[in-house]
Image 1 (cartoon, rainbow, N blue to C red):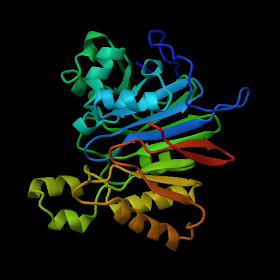
Image 2: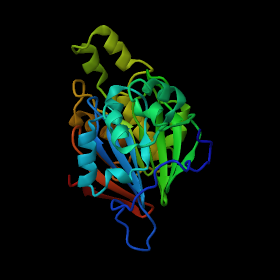
Image 3: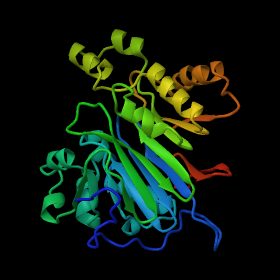
Length: 303
C-alpha cells in the first residue's frame, strides 16, 4: 500500500533515461503532458518530468500506446507505471497487454484494482498492483501524485492532480458533477484537462436508449459542455492558463461545439486573452505541453 507522502516501493522498475522533458542540461525539469487519445472510444495520456514518465490510463491498444510513445522519443520500457482512473474499457483496453509485456506497476484505488483483477491477469499474478485511497498523495520519481475522488459509475474512480518541477496539472474526466473535492483539486493548477463530454439536448433527443441517456446525464455519468465550462471557469479563476477539453462523445458532441460553449463562458467572465482553450484529438496524440511558472509551451507531437 502507498501511504500518504511515501516513496514508491523498491520493487517498482527504475525509470530509464528520458528524452521527453526537453530541458537544457543543468536546468530544472519541466512538467510535460500529452494526450495519446481522448474520447469515449479510448483514453490514454503521458505525463513526464525529468527522467520520470507515467502513463495515465491505457484505453487504447498496447501497440498504439507504444507506437505513440516511441514517436515522442520515450522508450515504453522507461515508464515508471500506469495511473488508472477507473476500470471502464475505454480506460484500460490496452492494460492487459502492456502489463504482460512490460511488467508495469499499476496504480489505482483498491476497489478499482479488485475490479481489474479478472480483466488484467498480470496484476495479481505478477503482483503489479499499487493501491491508494482517494486523498492519499504519494511521490513517483520526480512527480507528486494527488488522487481525488470523482463521481462515476465505477468501483472507486479518481482524477489526478500531478506536480513536477514548479508546475501542476489536473486530469479531471469521467464525473457526473463537480464536487468539493474536485473544486479543491483544480484550484491552483497551471493546466486543466477538463471533461466536456456531451451536449445535454443532443443526448436527450438522440438515439441512445433511455437507460444510457439516464446514465450519461446522471450524477455518476459525465460532465456536459455547460458543466465542463463551469469547471474550466473555476480553474481559470484560480490561475489556470491552459484548459484542454477531453473525453468528448463522438455521438453527442463535436470539438467545435464544445470549444464554442466553454469559450463563451470564459469570454463572458473576462478570460478570453488570459486562458488558452483547446480540445484533445480523439484518436491521435495531441500537442505536447511543457509547463513552467514562466508559461506553458506547446509543440506538435511527431508520431
